[in-house]
Length: 254
Length: 344
Image (cartoon, rainbow over all chains, first blue to last red; front, side):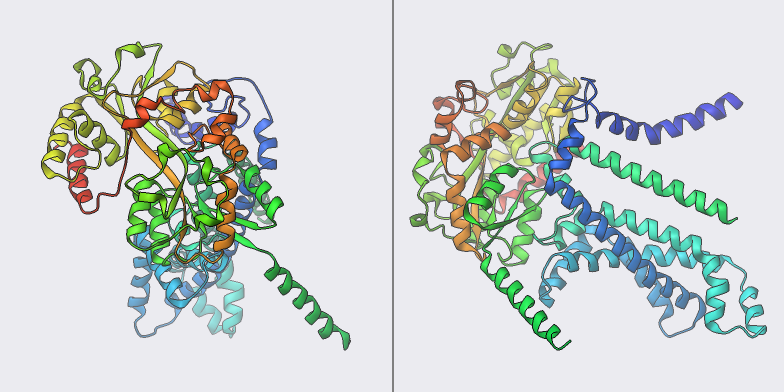
């Protein structure tokens, strides 16, 4: 039984991480297509360094993803608080409208955004892209934070009110620390969603602002180059670093 | 302190004049489908700043241009069937040929085709073909000469087809002696019924990169694009390319100027630049696709010039039929296509 448990765990992890491992290995593979090992090389790293268009798209993607995630987290957290704490007309409608955004196929949102931006005369580029990304990230933040809010003991808030704490104090000292993990999770989720998105982005961005996923998908015409493996490896290294850092920080705190 | 606003104003003015002084060109194309150094050289020579934007398929490009009514981009590079569609929908503007000094370099083989008679709206950039790929380690390439050979029962569960309605129907239409642009329901039905017979042989439909399963050794026979063969051969010389005797599929990507382009002058300069022989030569050397530029071809090495994958013989070119927009008949194809893939 124990052997089964371990082989199952190993199988799951292999399934999850083997492809990533192969990608990392191929970023050092001298063969352009990676079907066989043709020697160790840093060639693709050097090439990526020179590939201005690809690195620029990468930086643009990081910029939009972090801004969109931050804005969506701010707005989404406030929205979740409102849905949780206050009663207002059409509250149920407001929360189900969020689900509609979440459940709509990307292509529907993409066309909707494009039509609206054109109708409003907003030039396609950085701003249109950012607005669209904030919009489709928003429901994910609201739902993550709202679930956390629903989970905690409401007597905590009543006790605080009883003891004369002001609204802002309750927020700062009780609500915020309790939902903080959900806020972080919402931010990370938004960041990933924004970084991944192809369909909506390809419709709402303009020529002045190109992002990574579009560029990578567009490479199918002439063949995706190994520089993309390198880029993915770097991204992986960055996220590993961030995850490790946050674990260490959290551990010190407790 | 009083000086600050004045200074600010001066800076702003300098910035705005700098912005106005700089000529711009917005190119909408596949990533790396024009070598980056070529774009950089063009910028250096002309002082025109190029914004290079990319799309991942013809349809995304088309919907974006269509919804923006042809505004926002100065140069686009659609495939032939879309050139005819966009031209008919008034999304393209006429190319002013008096502004082009290098027009004479283009080979007449690829001009004046039905998708744009007289080339009023488009000039070819690169082209290629869809034929049969064979791994010579497993199959003798000389035994495969036609599309009909793929129907042989011995290939059961072995073939790769491209995941493209028009290309797959091209194969069956040509096998039965019809045009690849047929809109005759009877002919399309015959092709469909023939394809049904082919289905047991099909292992996989590949949308992005047919070379990959060939290189991985998963398939040894099937449809493939000429450019993909050139890429694959760099790593695995066993992969051969056959022009089926009924006629390979041909596609061409062309430069067009959308009707709402803002930098029409720069767009013409860019097209003219791309038509230079030495630029065309560099494009072929970097990308491995075929150039319609006869003067550029003459500059290439003997080896490239005589590579039949890149430059098929005059005989093959004479019968080459390019894909055209087929309008409403597309629905008919799509219906059959769905049935084929769901195995009805």
